[in-house]
Length: 239
Image 1 (cartoon, rainbow, N blue to C red):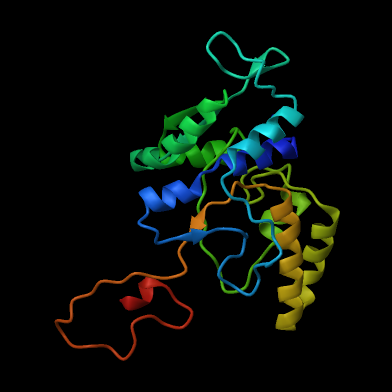
Image 2: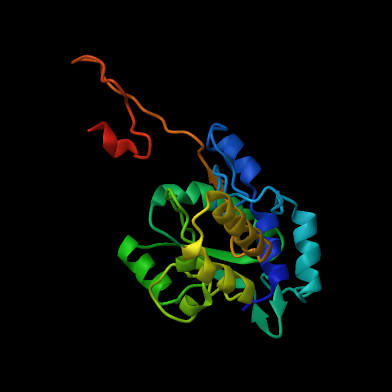
């Protein structure tokens, strides 16, 4: 709680002012993340597109019982005698500039977001043990998605795996179990797109941003190689 209520999860997605972050902090070099499999054929184009909308967010909070009129003496939202207060670990001080924007937007509606600077080891331990309220994570992609490791319910109640949201869905389980036997690319794409839409509509994440490009800077001292990046590699192939 309170994120066991999908209305609260959606509200946080609406509070996530990515437009401001990209404009003021990121030089408009990123794109909106609307999928668990962005910039690939596995992204479902029909996923909900969440954009900053604090009015809609407040409406959802009210539906979930977090009424704006119910605030304590310090102005924080209260429900059933409990203040709406959550903590977010930051492993880099530079991240404060990002999440201070979210912190201020939440403060305006009575939600107290505490930003805690911790080591990476502390953060990964707490997430692995499911000892957290909200968490900021960043992922890279792989050539062929493996939805089972992060979406199958068999991992939902076990520690130290990629199903950190404790997600359980019978249809997703069914697809995950059939997926290893799908040898046609078109079939795999259709399967992952279905999972993508189901998971996105559950609002497991307030989705952030991604770069559909790689930036390189190199010194042409010894001549030009035949190619810079390999077809399926990353910046390590430069070496």
